[in-house]
Image (cartoon, rainbow, N blue to C red; front, side, top):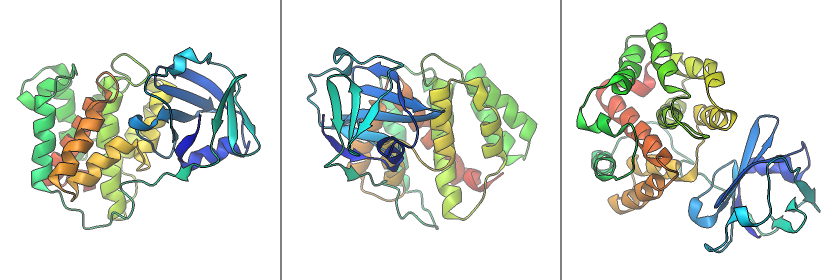
Length: 289
Protein backbone atom coordinates (compact mmCIF):
# COMPACT_ATOMS: atom_id res chain seq x y z
CA UNK A 1 0.00 0.00 0.00
CA UNK A 2 1.73 3.22 -1.14
CA UNK A 3 1.61 6.28 1.14
CA UNK A 4 0.85 9.61 -0.56
CA UNK A 5 1.37 12.01 2.37
CA UNK A 6 2.72 11.60 5.88
CA UNK A 7 2.79 13.69 9.03
CA UNK A 8 6.08 14.39 10.79
CA UNK A 9 5.21 12.10 13.71
CA UNK A 10 5.76 9.09 11.45
CA UNK A 11 9.51 9.62 11.88
CA UNK A 12 9.09 7.91 15.27
CA UNK A 13 7.87 4.81 13.49
CA UNK A 14 10.09 4.85 10.39
CA UNK A 15 13.28 5.48 12.36
CA UNK A 16 12.43 2.78 14.89
CA UNK A 17 12.67 5.20 17.79
CA UNK A 18 9.98 3.33 19.74
CA UNK A 19 7.83 0.22 19.15
CA UNK A 20 4.34 0.71 17.73
CA UNK A 21 1.40 -1.68 17.90
CA UNK A 22 -1.93 -1.84 16.11
CA UNK A 23 -4.44 -0.22 18.44
CA UNK A 24 -7.65 -0.54 16.41
CA UNK A 25 -8.75 -1.44 12.88
CA UNK A 26 -11.78 -0.10 11.01
CA UNK A 27 -13.01 -0.41 7.42
CA UNK A 28 -11.17 2.77 6.38
CA UNK A 29 -8.78 3.54 9.24
CA UNK A 30 -5.98 1.91 11.24
CA UNK A 31 -4.73 3.35 14.53
CA UNK A 32 -1.23 2.59 15.81
CA UNK A 33 -0.13 3.27 19.38
CA UNK A 34 3.15 3.52 21.30
CA UNK A 35 3.44 4.71 24.88
CA UNK A 36 0.37 6.96 24.62
CA UNK A 37 1.26 8.35 21.18
CA UNK A 38 -1.10 7.52 18.30
CA UNK A 39 -0.59 7.39 14.54
CA UNK A 40 -3.34 6.77 12.01
CA UNK A 41 -3.36 5.35 8.49
CA UNK A 42 -6.20 6.59 6.29
CA UNK A 43 -7.21 6.38 2.62
CA UNK A 44 -6.81 9.59 0.61
CA UNK A 45 -10.47 10.59 0.84
CA UNK A 46 -10.24 10.67 4.65
CA UNK A 47 -7.68 13.49 4.88
CA UNK A 48 -4.44 13.76 6.85
CA UNK A 49 -2.50 15.60 9.52
CA UNK A 50 0.71 15.48 11.57
CA UNK A 51 -0.26 12.15 13.10
CA UNK A 52 -1.69 10.67 9.89
CA UNK A 53 -0.49 8.96 6.74
CA UNK A 54 -2.78 8.90 3.71
CA UNK A 55 -2.68 5.77 1.58
CA UNK A 56 -3.54 5.33 -2.10
CA UNK A 57 -6.00 2.47 -1.77
CA UNK A 58 -9.17 1.58 -3.67
CA UNK A 59 -12.49 2.55 -2.13
CA UNK A 60 -13.53 -1.08 -2.47
CA UNK A 61 -10.83 -2.34 -0.11
CA UNK A 62 -11.54 -2.60 3.61
CA UNK A 63 -8.70 -2.61 6.12
CA UNK A 64 -10.63 -5.09 8.25
CA UNK A 65 -10.33 -7.63 5.45
CA UNK A 66 -6.52 -7.57 5.35
CA UNK A 67 -5.91 -9.80 8.35
CA UNK A 68 -4.86 -6.96 10.69
CA UNK A 69 -5.53 -7.26 14.40
CA UNK A 70 -5.00 -5.14 17.57
CA UNK A 71 -1.84 -5.83 19.52
CA UNK A 72 0.33 -6.76 16.54
CA UNK A 73 3.75 -5.06 16.70
CA UNK A 74 4.37 -3.34 13.39
CA UNK A 75 7.89 -3.38 11.99
CA UNK A 76 9.78 -0.72 10.02
CA UNK A 77 11.86 -2.17 7.17
CA UNK A 78 14.62 -0.43 5.17
CA UNK A 79 13.65 2.93 6.66
CA UNK A 80 10.63 3.48 4.42
CA UNK A 81 8.35 0.43 4.64
CA UNK A 82 6.19 -0.72 7.55
CA UNK A 83 4.85 -4.24 7.93
CA UNK A 84 1.35 -4.28 9.44
CA UNK A 85 0.88 -8.03 9.06
CA UNK A 86 2.91 -10.87 7.52
CA UNK A 87 1.55 -10.05 4.04
CA UNK A 88 0.71 -6.34 4.43
CA UNK A 89 3.35 -3.67 3.73
CA UNK A 90 2.91 0.11 3.75
CA UNK A 91 5.42 1.89 1.51
CA UNK A 92 6.46 5.44 2.51
CA UNK A 93 9.23 5.81 -0.09
CA UNK A 94 7.35 8.23 -2.42
CA UNK A 95 5.30 10.03 0.24
CA UNK A 96 5.34 13.81 0.63
CA UNK A 97 5.32 15.69 3.94
CA UNK A 98 1.90 16.87 5.03
CA UNK A 99 1.38 20.64 5.19
CA UNK A 100 -1.23 22.22 7.42
CA UNK A 101 -3.89 24.49 5.85
CA UNK A 102 -3.26 26.76 8.86
CA UNK A 103 0.42 27.23 8.06
CA UNK A 104 1.45 30.86 8.11
CA UNK A 105 -1.63 32.21 9.88
CA UNK A 106 -0.65 35.28 11.88
CA UNK A 107 -2.32 38.07 13.85
CA UNK A 108 -4.48 39.98 13.35
CA UNK A 109 -6.94 37.18 12.71
CA UNK A 110 -10.25 38.10 11.13
CA UNK A 111 -13.52 36.17 11.17
CA UNK A 112 -15.09 36.36 7.74
CA UNK A 113 -18.79 36.82 8.54
CA UNK A 114 -20.04 35.28 5.29
CA UNK A 115 -18.07 32.11 5.91
CA UNK A 116 -19.17 31.90 9.55
CA UNK A 117 -22.80 32.10 8.42
CA UNK A 118 -22.13 29.37 5.85
CA UNK A 119 -20.76 27.17 8.63
CA UNK A 120 -23.83 27.90 10.75
CA UNK A 121 -26.19 27.08 7.86
CA UNK A 122 -24.38 23.80 7.13
CA UNK A 123 -24.69 22.75 10.76
CA UNK A 124 -28.36 23.71 10.92
CA UNK A 125 -29.11 21.80 7.72
CA UNK A 126 -27.11 18.71 8.61
CA UNK A 127 -28.86 15.37 9.12
CA UNK A 128 -26.08 14.02 11.35
CA UNK A 129 -27.64 12.59 14.55
CA UNK A 130 -25.64 14.61 17.06
CA UNK A 131 -26.85 15.13 20.64
CA UNK A 132 -25.71 18.76 20.33
CA UNK A 133 -27.94 19.77 17.40
CA UNK A 134 -30.38 21.53 19.76
CA UNK A 135 -27.68 24.10 20.60
CA UNK A 136 -28.31 25.87 17.28
CA UNK A 137 -32.09 25.86 17.81
CA UNK A 138 -31.84 27.83 21.04
CA UNK A 139 -33.29 24.97 23.06
CA UNK A 140 -32.28 24.26 26.64
CA UNK A 141 -31.37 21.02 28.35
CA UNK A 142 -28.64 19.91 30.72
CA UNK A 143 -26.03 19.49 27.96
CA UNK A 144 -26.73 22.86 26.43
CA UNK A 145 -26.56 24.56 29.81
CA UNK A 146 -23.11 23.01 30.28
CA UNK A 147 -22.00 24.49 26.95
CA UNK A 148 -23.24 27.94 27.94
CA UNK A 149 -21.36 27.53 31.23
CA UNK A 150 -18.14 26.90 29.27
CA UNK A 151 -18.53 30.32 27.70
CA UNK A 152 -19.57 32.34 30.74
CA UNK A 153 -17.16 30.71 33.22
CA UNK A 154 -14.18 31.61 31.07
CA UNK A 155 -15.37 35.17 30.54
CA UNK A 156 -15.93 35.55 34.29
CA UNK A 157 -12.51 34.05 35.09
CA UNK A 158 -14.23 31.30 37.09
CA UNK A 159 -11.97 28.19 37.00
CA UNK A 160 -14.23 26.15 39.30
CA UNK A 161 -17.31 26.79 37.16
CA UNK A 162 -15.31 25.98 34.02
CA UNK A 163 -14.08 22.71 35.52
CA UNK A 164 -17.62 21.72 36.50
CA UNK A 165 -18.82 22.26 32.92
CA UNK A 166 -15.85 20.42 31.44
CA UNK A 167 -16.42 17.46 33.76
CA UNK A 168 -19.92 17.13 32.36
CA UNK A 169 -18.64 16.99 28.78
CA UNK A 170 -15.20 15.36 28.65
CA UNK A 171 -15.70 11.63 28.24
CA UNK A 172 -19.45 12.03 27.64
CA UNK A 173 -20.86 9.83 24.89
CA UNK A 174 -20.03 6.48 23.24
CA UNK A 175 -17.09 5.49 21.04
CA UNK A 176 -13.32 5.98 21.02
CA UNK A 177 -13.87 9.74 20.66
CA UNK A 178 -17.02 10.64 22.65
CA UNK A 179 -19.27 13.48 21.48
CA UNK A 180 -18.34 15.69 24.40
CA UNK A 181 -14.65 15.33 23.57
CA UNK A 182 -15.21 16.16 19.91
CA UNK A 183 -16.99 19.38 20.89
CA UNK A 184 -14.20 20.32 23.31
CA UNK A 185 -11.64 19.52 20.59
CA UNK A 186 -13.25 21.99 18.18
CA UNK A 187 -13.37 24.67 20.87
CA UNK A 188 -9.78 23.98 21.97
CA UNK A 189 -8.20 23.96 18.52
CA UNK A 190 -9.87 27.22 17.50
CA UNK A 191 -8.93 28.92 20.75
CA UNK A 192 -5.32 27.69 20.52
CA UNK A 193 -4.87 28.91 16.93
CA UNK A 194 -6.18 32.31 17.95
CA UNK A 195 -3.99 32.56 21.03
CA UNK A 196 -0.86 31.39 19.21
CA UNK A 197 -1.33 34.05 16.56
CA UNK A 198 -1.28 36.68 19.32
CA UNK A 199 1.61 35.09 21.24
CA UNK A 200 -0.48 34.13 24.27
CA UNK A 201 0.41 31.20 26.53
CA UNK A 202 -1.97 28.62 27.98
CA UNK A 203 -4.72 29.97 30.20
CA UNK A 204 -7.49 28.67 32.44
CA UNK A 205 -9.11 26.66 29.64
CA UNK A 206 -5.95 24.84 28.61
CA UNK A 207 -4.97 23.98 32.18
CA UNK A 208 -8.43 22.67 33.10
CA UNK A 209 -8.89 20.59 29.96
CA UNK A 210 -5.43 19.05 30.43
CA UNK A 211 -6.16 18.17 34.05
CA UNK A 212 -9.34 16.29 33.06
CA UNK A 213 -8.01 14.16 30.19
CA UNK A 214 -7.98 11.12 32.48
CA UNK A 215 -11.79 11.13 32.33
CA UNK A 216 -11.83 9.92 28.73
CA UNK A 217 -10.29 7.18 26.57
CA UNK A 218 -6.57 7.36 25.62
CA UNK A 219 -7.17 7.89 21.88
CA UNK A 220 -9.55 10.77 22.49
CA UNK A 221 -7.27 12.26 25.16
CA UNK A 222 -4.43 12.21 22.65
CA UNK A 223 -6.47 14.12 20.07
CA UNK A 224 -7.46 16.68 22.70
CA UNK A 225 -3.81 17.20 23.67
CA UNK A 226 -2.98 17.74 20.01
CA UNK A 227 -5.76 20.34 19.70
CA UNK A 228 -4.39 22.19 22.73
CA UNK A 229 -1.10 22.43 20.83
CA UNK A 230 -2.84 23.81 17.73
CA UNK A 231 -2.88 20.60 15.69
CA UNK A 232 -5.86 18.72 14.28
CA UNK A 233 -7.13 16.56 11.46
CA UNK A 234 -6.90 18.14 8.01
CA UNK A 235 -10.65 18.58 7.63
CA UNK A 236 -11.12 20.64 10.80
CA UNK A 237 -8.02 22.70 10.00
CA UNK A 238 -9.45 23.40 6.53
CA UNK A 239 -12.71 24.69 8.02
CA UNK A 240 -10.81 27.00 10.35
CA UNK A 241 -8.59 28.26 7.54
CA UNK A 242 -11.66 28.95 5.38
CA UNK A 243 -13.51 30.95 8.03
CA UNK A 244 -10.37 33.02 8.42
CA UNK A 245 -10.41 34.23 4.83
CA UNK A 246 -10.91 31.82 1.93
CA UNK A 247 -13.79 31.86 -0.55
CA UNK A 248 -17.34 30.60 0.12
CA UNK A 249 -16.87 27.81 -2.44
CA UNK A 250 -13.88 26.45 -0.52
CA UNK A 251 -15.81 26.83 2.72
CA UNK A 252 -18.65 24.63 1.46
CA UNK A 253 -16.29 21.86 0.41
CA UNK A 254 -14.38 21.98 3.69
CA UNK A 255 -17.50 21.79 5.86
CA UNK A 256 -18.91 18.91 3.81
CA UNK A 257 -15.71 16.94 4.32
CA UNK A 258 -15.68 17.58 8.08
CA UNK A 259 -19.35 16.71 8.59
CA UNK A 260 -18.68 13.34 6.95
CA UNK A 261 -16.21 12.26 9.65
CA UNK A 262 -17.44 9.45 11.91
CA UNK A 263 -20.98 9.06 13.19
CA UNK A 264 -21.34 12.53 14.72
CA UNK A 265 -17.66 13.40 15.33
CA UNK A 266 -17.38 15.77 12.38
CA UNK A 267 -20.54 17.63 13.35
CA UNK A 268 -19.49 17.91 16.99
CA UNK A 269 -16.04 19.22 16.09
CA UNK A 270 -17.51 21.67 13.57
CA UNK A 271 -19.95 22.92 16.19
CA UNK A 272 -17.02 23.50 18.55
CA UNK A 273 -15.30 25.56 15.85
CA UNK A 274 -18.48 27.54 15.17
CA UNK A 275 -19.22 28.27 18.85
CA UNK A 276 -15.66 29.38 19.63
CA UNK A 277 -15.62 31.70 16.61
CA UNK A 278 -19.04 33.12 17.44
CA UNK A 279 -18.00 33.64 21.07
CA UNK A 280 -14.76 35.25 19.89
CA UNK A 281 -16.70 37.58 17.59
CA UNK A 282 -19.05 38.60 20.41
CA UNK A 283 -16.88 38.47 23.53
CA UNK A 284 -13.23 38.01 22.54
CA UNK A 285 -13.61 34.52 24.08
CA UNK A 286 -10.49 32.93 22.59
CA UNK A 287 -8.23 35.61 24.06
CA UNK A 288 -9.85 35.53 27.50
CA UNK A 289 -8.71 33.42 30.41
